[in-house]
Image (tube, rainbow, N blue to C red; front, side, top):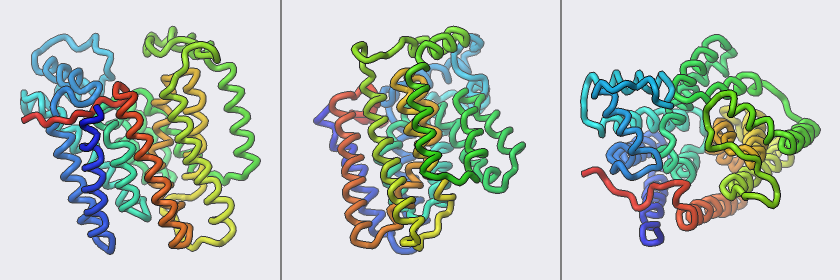
Length: 359
């Protein structure tokens, strides 16, 4: 694995260089070039790149082979999507090409619309999230559906947003949690609210595991996630590390909001409400923390941690130029180091290296 880590660094360097060239008033050019690169990498990847890529390909083959798909664990919307696509082509690579196009174009479009610092948001996406788009395809389809409907949240059109969330659940059931976006978006948040949420989170953490097992048994899904994880028993290293990352992000957003932004020391205007971004980072931290006791909740935390690619650049932009540059080096260096450690010591979490094309 160490021999192929250069592929990950090369992608970051390429995006970084072209971002620096397009830094002034050329956001659309930068985003378009980056989209084409990421789409090529994702859509034309070999079938062994990505933890679940081979199963997605096999399911697509089953869709046009007239096999009985009723017993598949995948949601009905995704199965129908495969069926429709198989009417146009029987080439298994098509499922990767089409899903990659939809996922990446939607995320790049979301960054362009809602990020005040497009370059940093895109770079963050490449560093932290792009490789996961090669793994959890169904959940990314679900999240882009709700991302594309985010304007309904801004316009306070609940019924329209609810329908989009329900549509997203037909691709991945976890998308139902995105309904929370609608209710937390207009909220004002104070330090005492944050303290209360953290206390409730600790209580849930203590008593959640036995309840989660019963829920899983009732639903008959996610059996592999069962098991009470207590101190002295199996340690969920992945959940702990991700919790630490979300903790660092939240602390940065917390300090930036309460000590820089609200003290009128920042003239930056946020596209999305700053309090929503702060609350999203808090909920991502809390849910990720509880996931140490119930790993299945990592999928839920993702609907809030996704906004990190918007919130981190937005809060960085609150600082003076010198501090801003220092923060960029520290934060991005930390995330690159984190991803490198994962690739080296836990490659099974994100099996995308060594990368190969399908040709």
